[in-house]
Image (cartoon, rainbow, N blue to C red; front, side, top):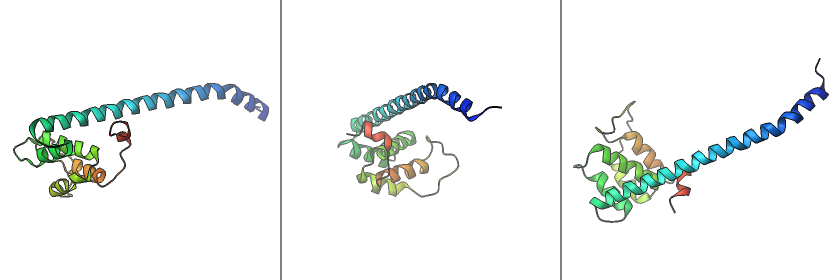
Amino acid sequence: MINNMTIKKIIDKLLPQLSVLVAIGIGVFLLFFVITCTWIGFEVKSECKHAQDKYDGDCVGALIELLDNENEGFKDRNTAIWALGEMGDARALPVLEKYYTGDIPEREPLNKVISQYELKKALNLARGGTNLTAIFWRY
């Protein structure tokens, strides 16, 4: 029969090893989080440059013009929606609201329609929603 003293000895023996494993797990998680945040920031800046190569103005203005130009492909327009959402700038609200119907289908081909799902997320962020990844690249 295992008594309380035996259980305490087992716990005392395993606790340092478990602490090391937890610390490694947290470290790996934080590493992946920082890498992901950096990648998102790089992609947003890349989309800004893409829009600014075609349209005048700052990043937000160029992305708004790209989104609002019906001659642009749906993939580029949906990417602009994503980037505007990631930036969280309220200046994008009117154009995002213009395209948002609130009817989000189960699946959306991003190269054939304006994504209502992406619009919903972008509207949330442009209205001040929390974007944890932006702290690593926005400023």
